[in-house]
Image: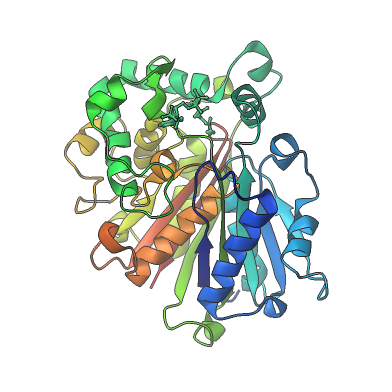
Amino acid sequence: MRDVAVIGIGCTNFGEVWESSFRDLFVTAGALALEDAGLSGETIDAMYVGNMSAGRFIEQEHIGALIADYAGLTTTHIPSTRVEAACASGGLAFRQAVIAVASGMEDIVVAAGVEKMTDVEPGASTDALTGAADREWEGFIGATFPGLYAMIATDYMNRYPLTREDLALVPVKNHKNGANNPIAQFRQEITVDTVLNSTLVADPLRLFDCSPITDGAAAVIVAPLERAREFTDTPIKILATAQASDTIALHDRRDISTLDATIAAGERAFRMARVEHKDIDLVEVHDCFSIAEICAIEDLGFCRKGEAGWFTREGETQIGGKIPVNTSGGLKSCGHPVGATGIKQVCEVVQQLRGEAGKRQVNGAKIGMTHNVGGTGATVAVHILGV
Ligand code: COA
């Protein structure tokens, strides 16, 4: 297997982007990534595109072909493949691109993600997202994603020392980071009171515990490490790519507030990268709801089970803390265009490792990790990147 590096990144603004269509979003992110790598479209050998539900959100399927077409790549007839794993679609698209280059099958590959979620009514977006859970045993009886994560939060808070105020510190920290991210959907800082006084969505989760409904796209370009310096002075090496699965329904899990797929993918990634927790300078985790970040930092092993509330309260997940978590603002503040999130996480880590993250820069960052979850933990992708 060959070593693989990221040579270019590009992200659109995240938010309610009325002025751009689904295809505009993708083309913008792809063009930014090509420009970043100093490449033209004809040099690309293949594309993998993460997208969860264009069929439900914009009534369009056949996304791989659509994107090759609107990216102007039909003359070279490159293979373009849609990858779907709910909110982990982006993470899996990145993994497919890395595997394609590592295997020697392809050289210059685009991994992208795109979702346009705000063109449908809120009820329709909630219902489309429920397709990431078990439709027959969860969705049909009324469970929504906020509802499922509320069950995780309730179970966790009954068993471990996490107060409602501790939980609020997760979005407070993520909004603080997101305020310094030019692409973020919500760029305002908030307080614990903002969270506690916001609308109740699914007890105990409130509006500010939830990631929003978002339009956006992100793209990265990967190449063999041995060729990377042809395109960039700062190639970022992919040290590990890992993926794991679990039951689709939450009630079939061994323990509903532990994501075993996160544990498995995390352990595989650490093994493959041959690094330890103390070597990781920052991690982008899948905080689709505040409780998800609490579970993620424990299940990835950055603190012990039951300690994430204390760990967060002590400031260990802030920039300057033991392990900065979600420097991009995470899904909560940066936004969560579901198919694009896993790629945006990679873009954030690459910016940090290049030292280009501005006011949210982690000083001297050399190794970063991404953690992208599909559903309530049925699919997890973990990547480790380093300079
Ligand atoms: N955080 C902060 N503010 C939010 C927000 C969020 N997550 N979602 C919406 N808002 C704001 C809007 O900007 C708007 O503000 P304004 O009145 O100042 O313009 C206001 O809240 C109402 O927005 P609206 O779009 O009507 O909210 P909603 O009630 O329809 O949706 C949620 C709110 C939380 C239900 C929705 O964002 C949601 O479903 N989130 C979860 C998404 C999800 O499950 N993703 C997959 C996870 S695996």
